Image 1 (cartoon, rainbow, N blue to C red):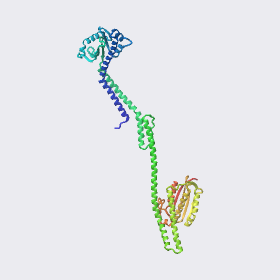
Image 2 (cartoon, rainbow, N blue to C red):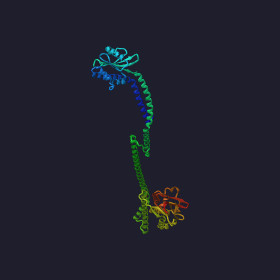
Image 3 (spheres, one colour):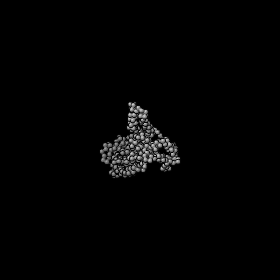
Length: 505
C-alpha cells in the first residue's frame, strides 16, 4: 500500500517517542531503586570523609570539632542535613556527645555505644532487621528496619581515623518502590500525551516538507509527458530548494534539447522527402521522356535512313524528309526545355520574384505576340479586360502561364473556334484571369489529372499538334509557388482555365 511521507514521518516520530517513553519507564522501574540506594550510600561516605578531615585537623580536640562543624560560615552540618536529611551524633573519647543534629540525642548515643560494643557481631551481618552494606574497617554502612515506624534507615557508624572519636550517621530510606510506581504512572500519562500531541504536530508540520515535494513530483510527471510549461517557484534555501532549481534547469535543458531534436528531425524528414521526390521525379522523368522521345527518334531515324539510302532523290522529297526531321527535332528540343523549366519550379530553383505590374497590359502584349498563331488556327479572339488591373506577382511566370493557357486553347478549338480572355475582380483582394475556348469538354474523371506531367486526354490528337503534356504541369508549379488558386471547369459550350492573383488596384 502506498504511504505518504507525512504518514511515514509521523509513524517514525511516534515510534521513537514511544521507545523513549518505554525506555524511561523500564529504567525507572528496574534501575531507579538501586541508583537511589547507592546514591544514599555515597552521601554517607562523602559526609564521613568531610567530617574525618575536620577530626584529623583538630587532632581529636572535641572543642575544635564542635566549633568547626557548627561554624555558621562553614555550614557543614546544615548542608548535610538539608541535602540528605541526616541525623548525626559524634562522641568523644570520654563518651560525651561532641556534635549532634538529631532530636533523640541520647538514644542515638546509646545506639552508637551498643554498635561499638558489638562491632564484631554486627560486622558478620547476622543480626535480624540488619543488612550489612559495606565494611570499610573504620566504619560500617548498614540498612536497618525500624519496626516502630515500619521504614528503613541507612546508617553509617564507626570511628574516625584518629581512633578515638566515634560517630553515627542515620538517613531515612524512602519507600522507593512506591515512588517508582508513582513516577511510572506519571511518565506513562505524560508520555502518552507527548506521543499524541507530538504526532499531530509532526503530521501538520511535515506538510511544509511534503507540499514542495508534491509540487516537484507534479512537475516531474508533466515533464515525463514532454510538458515543460511549469516551473518550481519555491524560495527554499535547503535541499528541496536546490532540487527545485535543478529540476527547473533540467526542464529548460530538456525542452531546448527536444526542440533542437525536433527541428533536426524535421529537416532530416524534409531531406528524406526531397530525396524521395527527386528519386521519384528521376524515375518518372526517365520513363516519360523515354516514352515521349521514342516516336520522334524513330521518325528521325527512319527518315534519315531514307535519305541515306537514296529514297528521296528529287529535291521535293528531300525537302519533305528534312522538314520531318527538323520538325521532330524541334519537338524534342521543346520537350527538353519544358522539362528543365518544370524541374526548376518543382524543386524551388526558380523562385518567385514578386513585383507590381499591370495585368491588362501584360495580357494585351501576349495576345499581340500570339496573333499570327491565332490567324493560322482561324481563332476568333474575344476579350473582357479591365482598363487597368494592378497585381502583385512574378510577371515573367504569369506570362508563361497565360501563354500555356492560350496554346492549350488554340490546340483544342472546334465549332465556332472562339477564345475568350477575361479579367474579373472576385474580391477586394483577388482578381481572376481566365482563358475560354469552345473546344470539346474534358471528361470529368480527367479534370484532376490534367495537371500531372505527361498526362494526355487524347494522345492521338496531342501527338498531332506536338503537345508533350507538360504545359499545364508548369502552370500548376508556378501557381503553387505563388500560393494562389488555379483550375479548370467545363462550361456548356467549352472549357475554361483560370488563375487568381493578388489585386492591388
